Image (cartoon, rainbow, N blue to C red):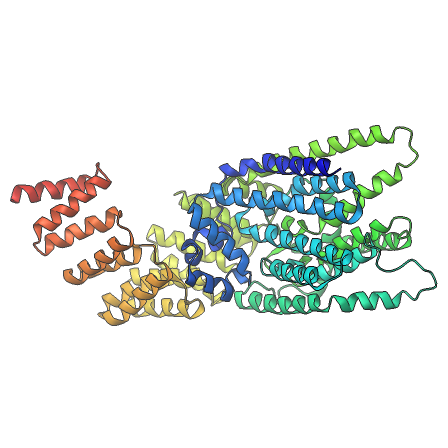
Length: 631
């Protein structure tokens, strides 16, 4: 039996890795990946004391999840910004989670094959593609992994009571919350497991059942305390980040109606995973009869599992595992603009998988060909799900494929219209991007993001008055919109309205003092205004925030050179070269500075270095030849 268990663990690992291996060819996407990795200066710095402090104190991306930040920093430390390895790290963590789930269920129930098929469903189900294929959703996998290990330690504690396993379970639960606060309901899952399969409530009909429940609940008080703390921190972080919708935007009745529909729709998508998307927009109008029908379905299922709890005890645990663990993300507290999300099912679907994998064999008891039917049914389901998952993974290869597919299967999706426009704009297709931003405004006239993006394209086209108009609309909708503030600052600077531009960047830094680009732009503006000491302080702030990038030093050097201050300019170019010794721009600008300072030999040395780094540089060849002729 032990050898068979190990073999099944190997099979689960290989299947998971093979199915998700195609993510090794995928790119980062421009939805949350920049905030978590590619544009996050703290993460791009890799592991450091400053990065560690930031991870534990930051509420960036409207969350407090230090272990998630650390996982991304570790990836950058070892692999840089190569997306292949970031994706493979997530796949590896998912594979480990699959094995831990199998070992947990088998250890609790002793049912080898049911546990195996639950883990297999968890491994390859299309609804889990989002959590694994999206680098920014690493937090889902980490949180679930720590949560399942916490449950494993809890089971060990139940079987061999003692402080060691209890404390281990509690600490791993805290680690789960520090990865993503999704599993604040895990103490309730423990109470469900106490019922089945751990059977801690007792079977004596004469026993008062209330006492064991209270005793078992008291046992989990420390877990509930950390759940409450995590919930409080999350509410604070979401409010601070502006991610939490207020009641005037999404009324309570609409939230309840959407939640009821979502609970049922997730079940439907589990059975028939079609038209999956990265974002399902919150509907403009909810149909009351659909919410009422969904509520009736939920009541019927809940009543049935309670009624048949003695005959099929796993139904009660499985169903309420699903129902309860979805509560934090079902939409009663609305975060973002989505009505539901595939990633929210990563942990909750385990409950439904358990219910199905135990119920189906039980219902077939007495069938003449039961083993044959199960032997055919299991591979068939697995093959179909794997095919759908493989296809769904293909949509995640880049921005264009993912957003195009999402727009095909959803409607009125202004957030994805924005993101698709950003992807097009980044590729130089500005006119097409402008069209999608306009469409986003038509879908949601209150989208500050869409107006800000229109302003960005207008600025790029040199239509400065149009840019000001669009940025103004964005800031009227959301005065704290950082992109609009920064864009307005750039536009006003281009119009020569330097004092107003300075104010815009200062306002942006009041909202987010860690905005590196704002510090850089503000430093350049202050140089133009002759406020060199103030400019220096913002330059140093930009360097501290992004110590591995020479951009701030290069920009400051060029600005000083334009002001005719060549000695100061050379000092900044020296900084750039120290930060990035192989930077062609740093060496070339140092060469130009040396030319202006009449230090010809040093200038020739810099241009020669540029040619070593970039042999085809015509500019460096021109300057080097000219200096050699002068000698």
